[in-house]
Image 1 (cartoon, rainbow, N blue to C red):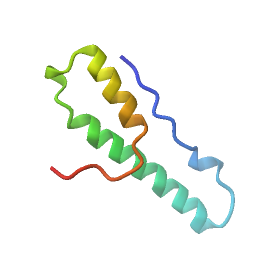
Image 2: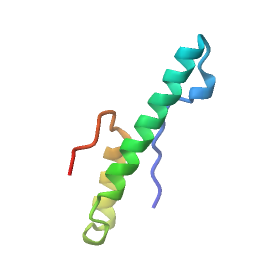
Image 3: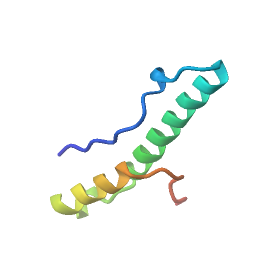
Image 4: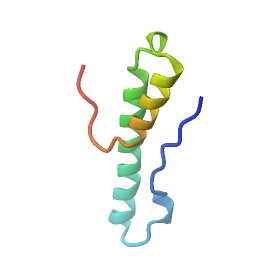
Length: 68
């Protein structure tokens, strides 16, 4: 199973060093949050359709993950 979690390429950002740094920080935050959500899924109890649905939902995640 695969999932596409598209995010803007921070290397494509032009501008001040601080703006470029913010772009990389935002990319890190998005990936970290999505991976955190993914690793908390109950993989053994999800069928492939449910897992695919959850992976697509994760790809739309922009906010902080819920605390455990």
